[in-house]
Image 1 (spheres, rainbow, N blue to C red):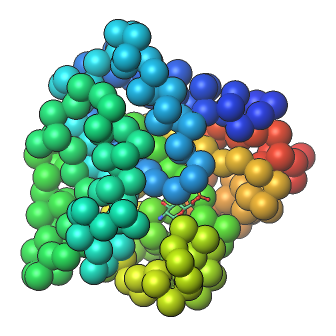
Image 2: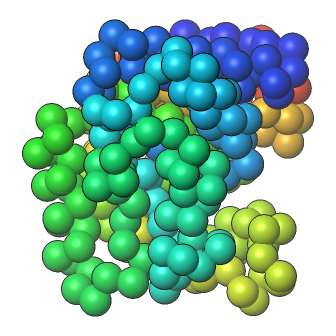
Length: 242
Ligand code: GLP
């Protein structure tokens, strides 16, 4: 793993945005895997800024988001589709038809998950997948469990994730109990992976994910088996690394 440690959240955001921007410049038709959560917000702001300045264009970029809450429509302000529109898609020159977020209200769950996988394949696979880290080591919404789920699937959220994500809802009762997520296999098939983490509350999971035992009980630990992973951390998130 390539580990980059920055002083501040802002530096982490700039560095990670530079890495994504370099991919877009090298291959303007690249396929990006995108993530939600508080951590990538600064990164997205930097990409919006670069696009406004004409340094990059999303005109030919295709995106696939990691996950979506089950039961939330695209226009629900808590949905990940809404998050992506608000933080990135509405502010860059991307063709909205080239943006993909799992459908939170799909009626046929199995068909929707299979179609998501097929769409990724049809696009030629993901060139660079952005990831945040859950406090319990989840990536996307792949929660700790006894095995690594391979493909896009429906998942029950753990109590700790419901609690952690409740800060963005009126109360924990409002947090959906289920979600759709790319599988660990989908994520590991990306040609390159970029992980961002910030803050001392992520320090222990950053350590466990990057140098602890590889186990599905810490889903992010599987990234140790990927040949091209870069972690961009602020110094607080890196504080438990040797
Ligand atoms: C959510 C998302 C994850 C994200 C995680 C961390 O649960 N499903 O994809 O990585 O939160 O979020 P944050 O960056 O807010 O800590």
